[in-house]
Amino acid sequence: MLLSRLWKRAASRTAKDTAVWAGTQPSAAHETYETHETYETHETHTHQSGRAPEQAGISKHPEIWFFGGKGGVGKTSCAAAQALALAEKGEATLLVSTDPAHNLGDLFGAIGGKPCNIAPRLDVMELDPERECDRYLEAVRHRIAPLVSGERSATVMRQLELSRHAPGTSEAALFDALVEIILTPPAPLEDEAPHYRHILFDTAPSGHTIRLLSLPEVLGGWLEGMLGQRRRAIAERSLWLDSQQASETPGEEAPEDPISEALEQRRTRYAALRQRLSDTRRARVILVSTPEKLPCLETTRTREALEAHGLAVGGLIINQCLPEPAAQGAGGPSSTPHESQADWVATWREQQQHWAARLEEAFADRPCVRLLRQPQLPEDRASLAPLVAQFTAFRPWSPTPAASSCGCAAPAR
Image 1 (cartoon, one colour):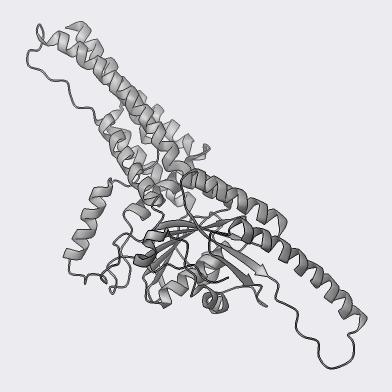
Image 2 (tube, one colour):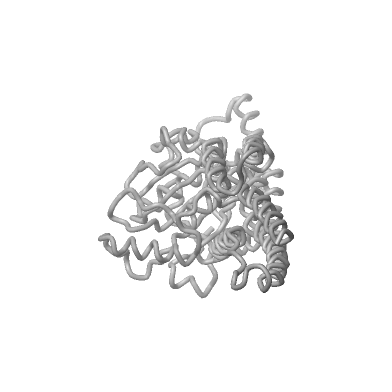
């Protein structure tokens, strides 16, 4: 009897340690809909709640667009222009910023962590890492509180508070929020649409984006290892309890393990996210670059890294291209200062043409769009109008079998 009690106490402590470890991983913050199947149920309930069904042939799952690229190439402007273009065509769109250095608010005014409507059929939100981290840690604290007590509880809570500044905590919280938006997106603020047709993400620079989008694969492997260790511990515990049942507690069954159940739920959740992101018909990354050497080389490497993780690159935006020179007037030759300036601009344009050609060669199998450098950089919604016009006809790459069903066609270069 004494040995059995000691075993149960040790197993309980092991469960608490595992809970603390598992509780600090992503997806602990939002437990409303844990699996891909319940997401389907949630959408069915939405239709049964009185909203009109969407047009026939339109999937309930929104198309996911990630705008990525090197810092300073114009990802925010391109994502905002594309979102406005889709909304103007009557397609309900959600634009989300995951970049800690938010710029959407500079374009559209004050934007918070919840969707706000800025135009017909267009909602916008910014994920604030600090706010998401606070919410994430509070949810973890609430989750593990029943599993620890006394002095051990104080130690765990202190370590949890210290983890706020640990490497990876903000990324985990941000990833957790991204998982929920993709698997259980909020309803559009306008009642005309039952759910969003598109969700666009304005992401941080390339390295951060690659790490963020590769997390489902990385954490999936981590969870497999955790579940394997947990199963072995439970199996050993069950064998011991079985050996004690005959003499001590006849008929007693091994208790259920909530830790294994929580880990299994997360694995299911990450598998659903992985499936959604690897669906090349409905999820893709749009890379943005400028026609310069460093952005060009980084954009090429970014595509290789994304595709290595099974993510589809749906197209390339070559931003800030210099326009062709205007024809000389019928008057006399230009003055010397003008000639010097013209030579400088001509050299710059020649360099841009070279790197733009390199980019188009590397992305020959994807839609590529050259955007001319505007006389005035985008500062608000009105100044985005020239870009919106250029994005109206853009359609990302999609596998050939789905081309006819989704209407996606590569625009002419």
